[in-house]
Image (tube, rainbow, N blue to C red; front, side):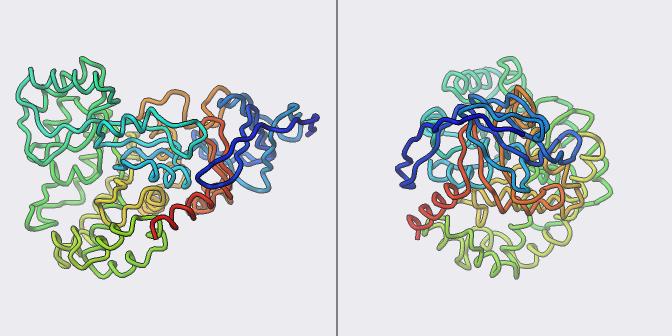
Length: 440
């Protein structure tokens, strides 16, 4: 490899962290391992050239000549992978966007969007620590075809990217179909819950939804989870049936496995371990106090006995369902349900926990990385995002280790790039430390 004379990069001050950011139009990751998400391998000794926010070249580092004026980020045994995509979050504060990006999330989808979220999506500077956002408008019900058309038209005029169907409350099949038709005619993706009072076969036959917001939605609509008796009527052998139904209709499924496990853990002896999570330092104090109370929302609603059923009966069914969906070639996308209203679902670290949960469920790390990158980007409608290849968007994460060997390596980030803007590890740490101090 050779290096031509370089010019000093432009700089800008990050007022929040009190440090200088380098603003480079040309960046080279030199001698890194590159994750090929399609083949599920790491290709060693690569040079990745980024110009104006786009990957311009990926080639052999040994034969690469660094352009004049480029900023060089040495590989030093590290691995470069596409940025993570969290397809299911509930964040409404710009400070929480910092949490997401600092943990490698370069794109996220807000599923209960409000007007302020649209402004948050469209505002800010490229230098701000924040992921790209998609914002869905939540729809709780429609009163016939005309109301469905009005609902979709209003959401599009207001600037929403997608619709999230919410249930409960119950839906009529006619109302569901009306919303589906209106969304399809407008070209607006319909995602979210499944109407929990209707059968999965009927819902999938309507070919309505782009994605299902949780694996657990199938418990309510197929396995049949009785509200007062968790586990009643659940036959794990039906996982293969459900997976085939999903594959036949080509609908993506968002995972949220860790969220479901955490619900059960909160209601049982796992509660003490959750209260001791060091990542709670990034949660607002009022949230920490609310989550740590013995009467938090999950512990009020779920008895220890039912929490144990969630962990020992239902969660394994969902793990099996994830494996079966993957085996049938259907699309899984990683999502967390991160929210300050759901105990211990901390925006940012929750995506690492979700990926670890999927590996523990028996999914190969390569498939988990694919679900957390290119699959998620596709679900969000992001073109040329989620792969490291020439012409693709430079949303990247530098990892201290090989995530294909252990996805837990994602806990050690060497830096994050969003749209060609580089946030080194020290910048990430400074931002997280600042946020923890504010929320102490």
